[in-house]
Length: 175
Image 1 (tube, rainbow, N blue to C red):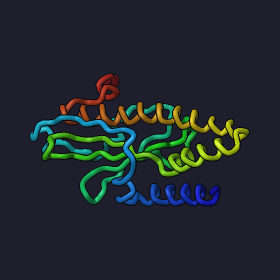
Image 2 (image 1 turned 30 degrees about the vertical axis):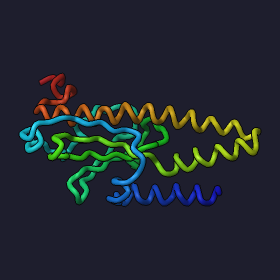
Image 3 (image 1 turned 45 degrees about the vertical axis):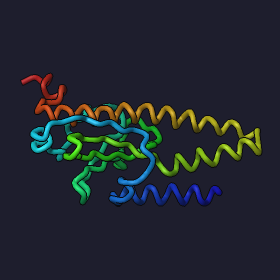
Image 4 (image 1 turned 180 degrees about the vertical axis):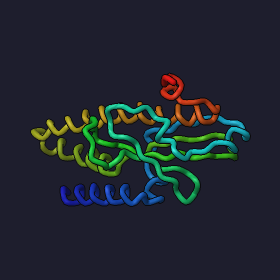
């Protein structure tokens, strides 16, 4: 079981590094925000350079890449950094849906985190002495909370672009 979990982690990292389009399109949605927009707003919306509209904070920066279907995938950077770290439970995607007149920001669950969580339940039921492993679930929750706030920043950046507003950090900059 441990070997399968390690293999799952390595495969997931490889798919993230390769920006595999199917990987960013499939999974369990943990974050799903819809932003209503007019056809005019959608027509003028550009998602290029979205990472520059995000606040710089102590966490690893989010990196974005356009996918062949026109959506934009994003995830935490793998670049070396002295920023804060947490276990990334999601990979994200920004999609323009002209038919529904909306932009969606979706965060899909990490396969490794799901596998580890599902594996813990039977282990703890069989061996109650393994209950300290539940700390991993607390760490996942903390990581999810941080990541959910960061994905909300992506939603705010998309909203600002839809309304042709400048991000607050650029407006507040001295001339």
